[in-house]
Image (tube, rainbow, N blue to C red; front, side, top):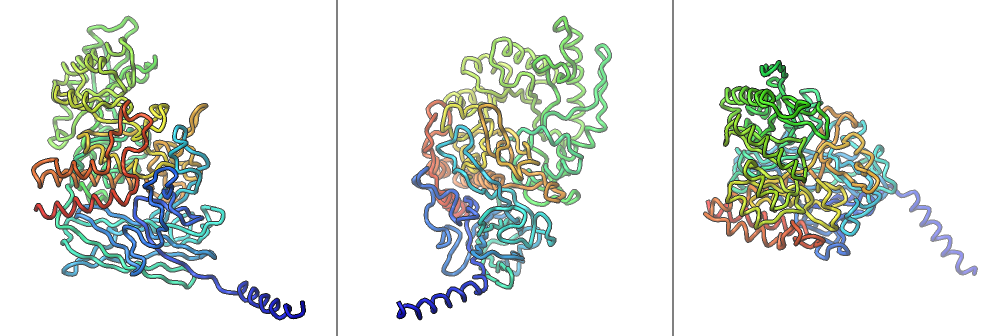
Length: 613
C-alpha cells in the first residue's frame, strides 16, 4: 500500500491542476441552412436515422456540404438577387462570455464587395419542445431545445443580440454547450459573377477563431417577381399600427411570400339602395402594397422585388358567418331573405370598388380575389347554392375576368363539378388533392392551389391547415417550392403570426382537448418581446424562402432549355412519390430526407442554367 502512495499523490496533483486550468476556449464549425443543432449535445436534431434512414447521421463537425473542416472554410453557391445562408456553431465545453461573430465583407471580382445590410448576422433563440405535435408522434424529431427565432445583430447586451454567453444568460438552457449564429448573404443583381471570399471571426473571453467563407456567384439572377403564386392567411396585421404592418409586408416580400390579409375595407354607408364608400383610410394603409411603393428605398426596403406590388389581394366582400351578421359586407341578408334591394347594394358596391381599383394603372396589375369567409370549408347543398349565388352576383357586377372567385376546402369532385360554373380558384386541402382531377379542372379553366400538411403520418393530420410545426424537419417548409413546381400549382398556408408573443417561451402554441401543436401557424415572432422594433424571422421562414427560391431555379432552367423535362428530372429525383391525396395517406417516405441532397440538386440546376445562357 505504501508503494501506491506516490502514485496517489501524483494523481491528486494532476486533478488539482486540472481544476485550476483555464477554460478550453471555443471550437467553431458550420452547418448549412437545412438542419438544426441541439445546443446541449451538439448533434443534429435532424440526425435521426431511426425516423428516416437517409437523415444525415454523421458528426457535422467533421465536415458537411458547406463545411470543409480541414481548411476551416464555409463554401456557398448563389445566383444574383438571391439569399443564401449558413450557420456558425460556437461550442464551449466550459462556457463562454462575450461571444461575438463578425463577417465584414465578401470581396469579389473587380473589387466588388458584398457587405453592410447584405450580410445579416442573427443570434439563434431556442424554444423547448416537450412532446411531439399531435398526429406526428412517429416523425416528430422529438423533445429538444430547437433553434428558431433569429435575433438580428446589435451592439448592446439586452435580452438578445450580440455579444452573448454560453450558456445563454436569457435563454436558460440547462447544460448548454453550443450556440448557433445564422448568417444570411444577399447577392445584389449588380454583383459580378465569380469567386468571393471573406473572413468570419468568432471571439469569446479572449479566445478567437477565424473561418474562411468562399462564395461562388453564378452568372444569372433570380427574377424580381415571385412566380410561384400563393399566400399565407393572416388576421392580425390589419390590427397593427401602419408602420409595424409595413415591416411585416417587407419581411414577407424579402422572403418571397404574400401575407393574405382578410379583409381591408373602405368605410361604407348604405341608405336604401344608395352606397357611399370613403377610401381615405383604405388608401393610406393599402395603397403602398398595391402600387409597390412599400417595397422601395423610400420606405426602407431592400432585397428582391423592389418596387413590385403584391401579387394578389382580397376584395372586401363577405356574408354572415354562423349567424353573425357583423361579418357581412356590404350588408347582411335581410330577415326576409334575398331582395332586389339587397342585390342592388352588392352590385353598386362592386361597381364602385372596380372603378376605384381601376383608377390607378399600378393597382390594375394586382390580381383581385373574392373570397367569402362566411362560406369557408362548408360542405352541404345549401352552402353550394350560396357559393353559386354570390359568385353569379359578383361576376355580374364586376365582370368575368376582372377578378377570381375563390373557395377553400376539401370538396368532392362532384361538388367541384357544380361549383366550377362560378369558381375560378379552388384552394384544395392536400388530403383531397388529386393531380388527375386538378389537371382536368385546369384545362377547364379552374385554377387550384394546395393547402395543408405536406406529409400525412396519420389520417387525423388532415385537420391541420399548416405544415409549420417546429418539431418537423425543415424540408416540409422547403418542399413548398418543389411540390409547387411538381404540380405547377400555387400554395396556401394558415397563419405565420399565431400566438407569436408567447411563442418565445412556449413551443405548444395551439392546444385544445384533443390536439397540441408546436409552432403551428407561427413563422414570425413579435420582436417587442425581446426589445426589437421589428418582426423577427424564424429558421422555418428561412427554409420556406429557400424552397421558394428553388422554384425560380426550376423555372429558369425550363426557360433556358425550352421544356420542363430537365427541371422535372431534378425535382422528381428528390420528390419521388406523390405527396398528397388518399394514395399518399400514411406514407411518410415521399422524398429524400437528407437536405444536402436537395442542395446538390440546386447546385446542379445552377450549373445547368449557366451552361444554357
